[in-house]
Length: 488
Ligand code: SF4
Image (cartoon, rainbow, N blue to C red; front, side, top):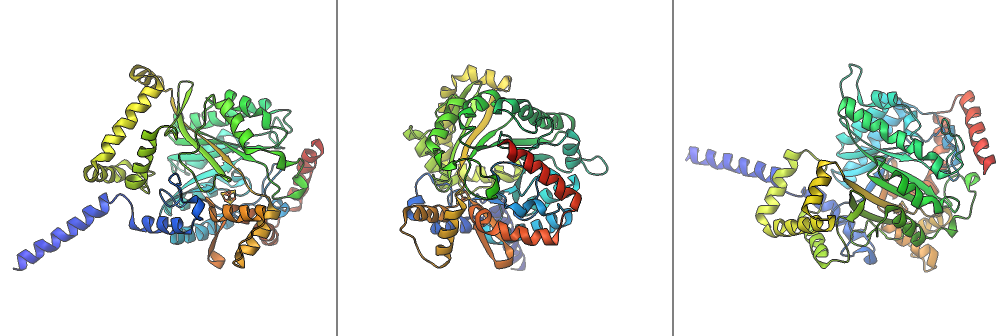
């Protein structure tokens, strides 16, 4: 009897552990996704919606290193951001607090942006520690930079004091465009083309890092779009599509941040026109309708890949078979953590395949379609052999004007829905926000638009008192900003 009970106990433990190792979606993830879905406005609960089906959204840091040594026009940071000293201890302790809060309130996995002012102003050790803290909370971090640092910085970032690799993969978003002032060698770029060598040089540093230290990487290219540089989008893409990036992200400028840096009429920027210019540069129709991240008025995303010079979407909204594949993905594979070790992922996928064979059947059909669209088996083999299959995502993210966000958020805080068309749209977009920032001190998460439009100014004033700049640096920043502004 005793032996039988013990055997039962052991069997129960083994079954429980097996279930844990193979359960596709962590129950906690499922709970947070369900909550996110429930919180979405009705018009966003569409078949294509990613929020609540596959993710709870993206996250970003704030108030951790607000200073930047460039002067961009426009800049979404409040004017006091540059009066805050970069301080590694402050950065890492704030990140610890924000990340711990995000973990408790949004679940065990997400993508997060290590963002503030300029990330490379952090000492490499502090930068590395920040990334390690983020990973320890299940986050996949991406560092945001103007890219104006040398190879040595990257090397120090990934290697510890003994020369051992401490970060075996990196994600960086490099910001390059003519709104920026201060890049070494090209303080005031005359046009976007003049920045191409810098775009390439940035990506080359990561290639070298991989070659010399085996560090894998993912690179995004970011560009602020203004009436002055919008028509250069096709040329930027055509010239840089093979530079080493896996994402090109465009942010139409908005009236947010430091109002002294607003130089043009950003309201003239038309999202459809920007998207058409992106398509011209990419040499393909960029299908963003099949997978929607939050509200289409905020985000358009086209996931795909190049086979040689041809861009193909991962899924096409014009093909019913792809729509079925997407629906099956959401149903059986949505919410799985793909950003993990293969031995953690594989048992979960095997379980899905065994319990839902339709996923294998449809997955195989989808793969066949992709091979056909790519030009056939031979072409795909050639592309694989010559490393000419490159994942490539195109994004447009439209921040909102601070004035509208202030009114909309104030009413939302009072529980009032506005009927005024602009404020109504702003409220809807804030409710469907894909990009969140944590405020552990008052127990809430806010959209990044709210952070930059409303909370940043006061936060940076307080930080400039807590972490004042040495006077010498204050003067130098003024002169960079003035030289940039005078050119405009
Ligand atoms: S509400 Fe603002 S921060 Fe959020 S997704 Fe829309 S534009 Fe982005």
